[in-house]
Length: 50
Image (cartoon, rainbow, N blue to C red; front, side, top):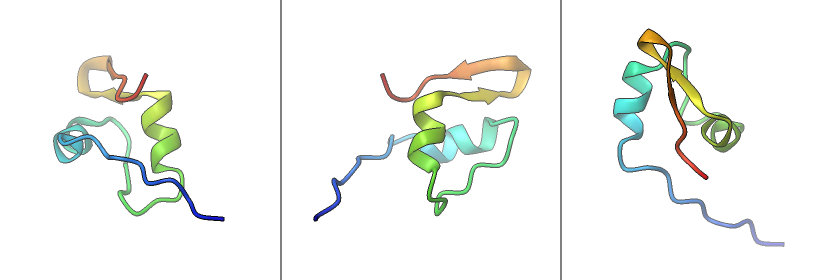
C-alpha cells in the first residue's frame, strides 16, 4: 500500500525557529504535530493545517 505524500508548509523552518518546543523535521509524528498546532514564543498558536 502506497503512502500519501504530504506537502509540508513552505515556512516550516520559520515555524521551527519560533516554536516553544523542539520540532524534528525527520520525526515520524511531524504531520501530527503540525495538525495539532504548535505553540510559538509568546504563546501564539500556529495552526498549520486545517
